Image (cartoon, rainbow, N blue to C red; front, side, top):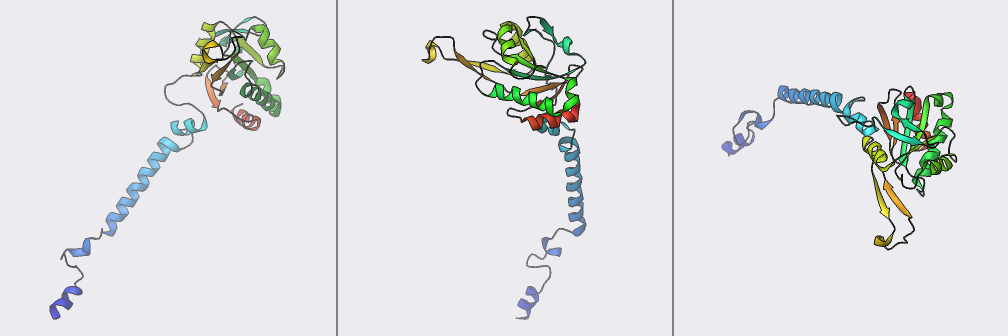
Length: 229
């Protein structure tokens, strides 16, 4: 009986190991401080404002990917236009096409409204609409279309090769959904285009600044523009 009682009250337990397997307090504190330090490093390198991860999730790009660059297109008046013609001004760029049923007119309207919201600051920005459908979007078609949105809006089109080059430069995309014979639709030349719908803000030096995701509101556009201008 005495032996059992002594064993039960033995602070070292049945194993006979000192401390009962508990981690010493100094070691626990060391682990805690090390974890905290690691968390600070992760935050400062990958999450804090201005870091690559923060720029990515806020709409800015990171890494080596380049958005934008030299281009040669034709404006709504039939004149040749290059990126150099916009040097010294910000560009608010959107890719789409004039036969787009919904997202294009909505986005162009939001761009125009946002410029109205920022008042005098809008004088530093040129809104640009680049067609992804040069087969139908002639300069005449572009001129007729953009007048419904904003007199400041510049419409750009060009040859298939010119348009393909600028679409690639901006990391945009477009896929024609032909409604002709192969798809069972009418063969009257009517078709839709599935395309990216981001809005790009390019700096006065021609370099990429920020991109707005599809569906961005006029209010969000205006808010972010004021931060950069």
